Length: 220
Image (tube, rainbow, N blue to C red; front, side, top):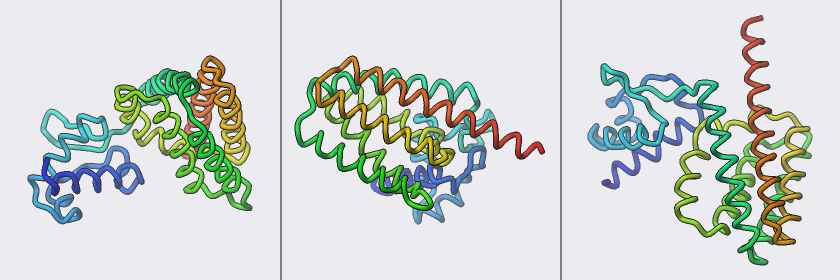
């Protein structure tokens, strides 16, 4: 891949993840090339890469759109994430060093501060939550697991989950991180895996409930 293609890939992906390019939005090469400041060839290469990663879908007429996840897609993504992240937590519990534990504590403290503000700082929550889970994955020491999880965790439906959280849901996420830390401190892989499974399952139900409530509001 050329540098221009890498730049187009990163920029288009960022627009999808941020919601600038909404689910179902059409993707036109000439417009994306102008936005990214590249020719259409790097954009075409970037689109093929994003299609392979399930961010973009192409119709039989070769038109491209941002993927709009179905309820089944959402459930599947969370189920796979729970399976893979629980395995990562089990491995990490056996391999994690003092530096990793300290970093996890720091990020979870930052999450608590973000949650307890008068108006919760969701971007800060998301950023520190991302670092928290990335440290666990790194401590698991499995390149194959990292590659598999990277695609699932970066899907827009997963990254946007916290946008649907109320304060109680954010606090529960913080407490579950505390329990993960307790499991890691004791090098108890089974405990860590069980907590991680519940953590991801709760995130799925929070997302599903919020999506259902939003659908009811639109129908009212």
